[in-house]
Image (cartoon, rainbow, N blue to C red; front, side, top):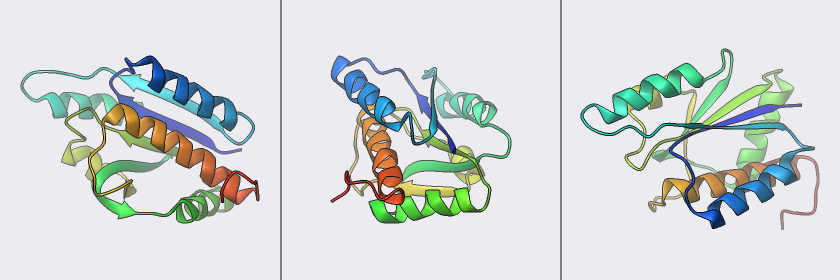
Amino acid sequence: MMNVRVLCVGRLKESFYEEACREYEKRLKGLCRLEIVELKEESGEKKLEKEAEAILAAIPRGSFTVALAIEGRLLSSEKLAVLLSEKALRGESRITFLIGSSDGLSERVKNACDERISMSPMTFPHHLARVMLLEQIYRAFSIASGGKYHK
């Protein structure tokens, strides 16, 4: 079973985001081992570099890393399912998705990642991006297993 870690800079504050995340966490229980790690959103000078230190330290050794970045590669849900399936077939059992703070991710973090993906050329609040990512991870596992969720 694949280990999926979602590293997020900042805490969810709105209850509707928390509720949506809990729903997808519940749905993912039988499909992967999901861990959501919230890191402190820094402030002040060198904010992104301080966050970069915490992010890089929280990535498990040997994990395939995916940065969510607006300039990343656009993937369909089916292509994300293929990406996850290919990693599993190659014996790569750990994947870590990175969601930056309201200021994004530092170039240092993005350059350290194996992949950059974009959900859209549009800009979304990073809290909503967490919900969207969890939904897409669930959809990808559903597609890969032949489930009926994806239409």
